Length: 245
Image (cartoon, rainbow, N blue to C red; front, side, top):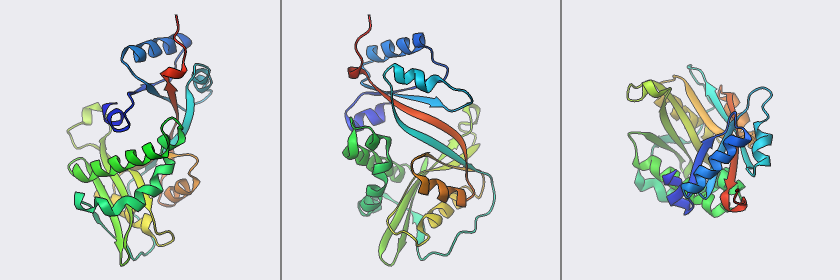
Protein backbone atom coordinates (compact mmCIF):
# COMPACT_ATOMS: atom_id res chain seq x y z
CA UNK A 1 0.00 0.00 0.00
CA UNK A 2 2.45 2.68 -1.23
CA UNK A 3 0.22 5.72 -0.66
CA UNK A 4 -0.39 4.99 3.03
CA UNK A 5 3.16 3.72 3.54
CA UNK A 6 4.69 6.97 2.29
CA UNK A 7 2.28 9.08 4.32
CA UNK A 8 3.04 7.51 7.72
CA UNK A 9 6.60 6.37 7.10
CA UNK A 10 5.80 2.69 7.70
CA UNK A 11 5.79 -0.02 5.03
CA UNK A 12 2.18 -1.29 5.00
CA UNK A 13 0.72 -4.28 3.21
CA UNK A 14 -2.79 -5.71 3.05
CA UNK A 15 -4.10 -9.27 2.84
CA UNK A 16 -7.53 -10.92 2.86
CA UNK A 17 -7.50 -13.67 5.50
CA UNK A 18 -10.80 -15.47 4.90
CA UNK A 19 -10.26 -19.22 5.08
CA UNK A 20 -6.70 -18.91 6.35
CA UNK A 21 -5.00 -21.89 7.95
CA UNK A 22 -1.90 -21.89 10.17
CA UNK A 23 0.15 -22.90 7.13
CA UNK A 24 -1.25 -20.08 5.02
CA UNK A 25 -0.63 -17.56 7.79
CA UNK A 26 2.99 -18.69 8.01
CA UNK A 27 3.39 -18.28 4.23
CA UNK A 28 1.83 -14.80 4.37
CA UNK A 29 4.18 -13.74 7.14
CA UNK A 30 7.24 -15.03 5.27
CA UNK A 31 6.25 -13.18 2.10
CA UNK A 32 5.53 -9.98 4.05
CA UNK A 33 8.98 -10.11 5.63
CA UNK A 34 10.59 -10.74 2.24
CA UNK A 35 8.79 -7.65 0.89
CA UNK A 36 10.03 -5.52 3.79
CA UNK A 37 6.52 -4.93 5.16
CA UNK A 38 6.43 -3.62 8.73
CA UNK A 39 2.67 -3.56 9.36
CA UNK A 40 0.26 -5.95 7.66
CA UNK A 41 -3.44 -5.16 7.43
CA UNK A 42 -5.51 -8.36 7.59
CA UNK A 43 -9.23 -8.42 6.85
CA UNK A 44 -11.65 -11.19 7.79
CA UNK A 45 -15.25 -11.03 6.56
CA UNK A 46 -17.97 -12.00 9.00
CA UNK A 47 -20.07 -14.94 7.83
CA UNK A 48 -21.66 -17.87 9.66
CA UNK A 49 -19.53 -19.88 12.08
CA UNK A 50 -16.26 -18.18 11.25
CA UNK A 51 -13.31 -19.24 13.40
CA UNK A 52 -10.70 -17.28 11.42
CA UNK A 53 -10.70 -14.23 13.74
CA UNK A 54 -9.69 -16.44 16.65
CA UNK A 55 -7.01 -18.15 14.58
CA UNK A 56 -5.36 -14.97 13.31
CA UNK A 57 -5.27 -13.48 16.81
CA UNK A 58 -3.44 -16.58 18.00
CA UNK A 59 -0.95 -15.86 15.21
CA UNK A 60 -0.29 -12.33 16.49
CA UNK A 61 -2.79 -10.21 14.59
CA UNK A 62 -4.36 -7.49 16.75
CA UNK A 63 -8.05 -6.66 16.26
CA UNK A 64 -8.17 -2.93 15.52
CA UNK A 65 -11.65 -2.30 14.22
CA UNK A 66 -14.90 -3.90 13.12
CA UNK A 67 -15.97 -2.09 9.96
CA UNK A 68 -19.50 -2.04 8.57
CA UNK A 69 -20.27 -1.22 4.94
CA UNK A 70 -23.77 0.12 4.38
CA UNK A 71 -25.89 0.01 1.26
CA UNK A 72 -28.85 2.10 0.09
CA UNK A 73 -31.11 1.19 -2.84
CA UNK A 74 -32.04 3.80 -5.45
CA UNK A 75 -34.72 6.25 -4.44
CA UNK A 76 -35.57 9.80 -3.36
CA UNK A 77 -34.45 11.38 -0.13
CA UNK A 78 -36.37 13.85 2.02
CA UNK A 79 -34.06 15.20 4.68
CA UNK A 80 -34.79 17.91 7.24
CA UNK A 81 -34.39 21.59 6.35
CA UNK A 82 -31.00 23.11 7.01
CA UNK A 83 -29.38 26.51 6.80
CA UNK A 84 -26.22 24.94 5.35
CA UNK A 85 -25.63 24.95 1.62
CA UNK A 86 -23.47 22.27 0.04
CA UNK A 87 -21.01 22.63 -2.83
CA UNK A 88 -18.06 20.85 -4.38
CA UNK A 89 -14.82 21.96 -2.76
CA UNK A 90 -11.55 22.92 -4.43
CA UNK A 91 -7.95 22.91 -3.15
CA UNK A 92 -8.49 26.55 -2.13
CA UNK A 93 -10.94 25.37 0.55
CA UNK A 94 -8.60 22.92 2.27
CA UNK A 95 -7.27 25.25 4.97
CA UNK A 96 -10.77 25.91 6.29
CA UNK A 97 -11.52 22.20 6.70
CA UNK A 98 -9.13 21.53 9.60
CA UNK A 99 -11.83 21.53 12.36
CA UNK A 100 -13.92 18.99 10.42
CA UNK A 101 -10.87 16.76 9.93
CA UNK A 102 -10.19 16.95 13.68
CA UNK A 103 -13.63 15.44 14.26
CA UNK A 104 -12.86 12.54 11.94
CA UNK A 105 -9.42 11.48 13.13
CA UNK A 106 -10.38 9.71 16.41
CA UNK A 107 -12.51 7.21 14.45
CA UNK A 108 -9.63 6.08 12.26
CA UNK A 109 -8.04 2.63 12.50
CA UNK A 110 -4.78 4.57 12.88
CA UNK A 111 -6.04 6.22 16.05
CA UNK A 112 -7.15 2.83 17.38
CA UNK A 113 -3.67 1.36 16.91
CA UNK A 114 -1.22 2.82 19.45
CA UNK A 115 1.66 2.06 17.12
CA UNK A 116 0.27 4.75 14.79
CA UNK A 117 -1.71 6.99 17.14
CA UNK A 118 -3.83 10.16 16.84
CA UNK A 119 -1.28 12.26 14.94
CA UNK A 120 -0.89 9.67 12.19
CA UNK A 121 -4.67 9.37 12.06
CA UNK A 122 -5.03 13.09 11.51
CA UNK A 123 -2.36 13.13 8.78
CA UNK A 124 -4.16 10.29 7.03
CA UNK A 125 -7.51 12.09 7.09
CA UNK A 126 -5.93 15.33 5.92
CA UNK A 127 -4.31 13.51 3.01
CA UNK A 128 -7.59 11.75 2.22
CA UNK A 129 -9.44 15.06 2.03
CA UNK A 130 -6.62 16.68 0.02
CA UNK A 131 -6.73 13.85 -2.50
CA UNK A 132 -10.50 14.18 -2.92
CA UNK A 133 -10.10 17.91 -3.66
CA UNK A 134 -7.31 17.34 -6.19
CA UNK A 135 -8.85 14.39 -8.07
CA UNK A 136 -12.28 15.68 -9.16
CA UNK A 137 -12.38 13.14 -11.99
CA UNK A 138 -12.36 10.27 -9.47
CA UNK A 139 -13.74 11.73 -6.24
CA UNK A 140 -16.05 14.42 -4.90
CA UNK A 141 -15.22 16.56 -1.89
CA UNK A 142 -18.31 18.32 -0.57
CA UNK A 143 -18.34 21.07 2.01
CA UNK A 144 -21.31 22.48 3.89
CA UNK A 145 -21.45 26.18 4.80
CA UNK A 146 -23.76 28.64 6.50
CA UNK A 147 -23.37 32.23 7.67
CA UNK A 148 -20.82 31.10 10.29
CA UNK A 149 -18.56 29.44 7.71
CA UNK A 150 -17.76 25.78 7.03
CA UNK A 151 -20.01 23.40 8.99
CA UNK A 152 -18.82 20.03 7.64
CA UNK A 153 -17.32 18.00 4.83
CA UNK A 154 -17.68 14.65 3.12
CA UNK A 155 -15.48 12.75 0.69
CA UNK A 156 -17.21 10.60 -1.92
CA UNK A 157 -16.01 8.19 -4.57
CA UNK A 158 -17.44 6.33 -7.56
CA UNK A 159 -16.47 2.63 -7.64
CA UNK A 160 -16.98 -0.01 -10.31
CA UNK A 161 -19.08 -2.96 -9.20
CA UNK A 162 -16.60 -5.47 -10.61
CA UNK A 163 -13.48 -5.83 -12.81
CA UNK A 164 -15.57 -5.96 -15.99
CA UNK A 165 -17.22 -2.63 -15.09
CA UNK A 166 -13.98 -0.60 -14.81
CA UNK A 167 -14.10 2.13 -17.43
CA UNK A 168 -17.68 1.24 -18.38
CA UNK A 169 -19.41 3.66 -16.02
CA UNK A 170 -21.18 0.87 -14.13
CA UNK A 171 -20.92 0.99 -10.37
CA UNK A 172 -22.03 2.82 -7.27
CA UNK A 173 -21.28 6.02 -5.39
CA UNK A 174 -19.99 5.83 -1.82
CA UNK A 175 -19.41 8.33 0.98
CA UNK A 176 -16.29 7.28 2.86
CA UNK A 177 -15.67 10.23 5.21
CA UNK A 178 -17.99 12.75 6.83
CA UNK A 179 -17.04 15.25 9.51
CA UNK A 180 -19.49 17.80 10.92
CA UNK A 181 -18.68 20.57 13.39
CA UNK A 182 -22.20 21.98 13.83
CA UNK A 183 -24.48 19.36 15.33
CA UNK A 184 -28.26 19.38 15.30
CA UNK A 185 -28.49 21.66 12.27
CA UNK A 186 -29.08 19.10 9.50
CA UNK A 187 -25.53 19.40 8.15
CA UNK A 188 -24.97 15.65 7.81
CA UNK A 189 -28.27 15.28 5.97
CA UNK A 190 -27.32 18.11 3.62
CA UNK A 191 -24.00 16.44 2.83
CA UNK A 192 -25.72 13.10 2.29
CA UNK A 193 -28.18 14.76 -0.05
CA UNK A 194 -25.18 16.01 -2.01
CA UNK A 195 -24.02 12.40 -2.42
CA UNK A 196 -27.47 11.28 -3.58
CA UNK A 197 -27.64 14.10 -6.12
CA UNK A 198 -24.17 13.18 -7.44
CA UNK A 199 -25.40 9.58 -7.76
CA UNK A 200 -28.57 10.78 -9.49
CA UNK A 201 -30.43 9.01 -6.64
CA UNK A 202 -29.09 5.65 -7.78
CA UNK A 203 -27.52 2.94 -5.56
CA UNK A 204 -25.16 4.31 -2.93
CA UNK A 205 -22.96 3.00 -0.15
CA UNK A 206 -21.47 4.41 3.04
CA UNK A 207 -18.38 3.42 4.99
CA UNK A 208 -16.85 1.23 6.07
CA UNK A 209 -18.02 2.74 9.37
CA UNK A 210 -16.53 1.83 12.74
CA UNK A 211 -19.03 -0.42 14.52
CA UNK A 212 -18.25 1.46 17.75
CA UNK A 213 -19.57 4.68 16.16
CA UNK A 214 -23.22 4.01 16.94
CA UNK A 215 -24.30 7.59 16.19
CA UNK A 216 -23.10 7.29 12.59
CA UNK A 217 -24.78 3.93 12.13
CA UNK A 218 -28.10 5.29 13.40
CA UNK A 219 -27.78 8.35 11.17
CA UNK A 220 -27.14 6.18 8.11
CA UNK A 221 -30.14 4.01 8.94
CA UNK A 222 -32.23 7.16 9.00
CA UNK A 223 -31.01 7.97 5.50
CA UNK A 224 -32.16 4.58 4.20
CA UNK A 225 -28.91 2.59 4.53
CA UNK A 226 -28.59 -0.88 6.00
CA UNK A 227 -25.52 -2.94 6.82
CA UNK A 228 -24.52 -5.17 3.91
CA UNK A 229 -21.01 -6.31 4.88
CA UNK A 230 -19.03 -6.64 8.12
CA UNK A 231 -15.27 -7.08 8.26
CA UNK A 232 -12.85 -7.61 11.13
CA UNK A 233 -9.79 -5.40 10.58
CA UNK A 234 -6.51 -6.62 12.07
CA UNK A 235 -2.95 -5.27 12.20
CA UNK A 236 0.09 -7.52 12.39
CA UNK A 237 3.33 -5.76 13.31
CA UNK A 238 6.14 -7.95 12.08
CA UNK A 239 8.64 -6.70 14.67
CA UNK A 240 6.32 -8.02 17.40
CA UNK A 241 6.48 -11.53 15.95
CA UNK A 242 9.54 -13.71 16.54
CA UNK A 243 11.15 -14.99 13.37
CA UNK A 244 10.01 -18.53 12.63
CA UNK A 245 12.43 -21.22 11.62
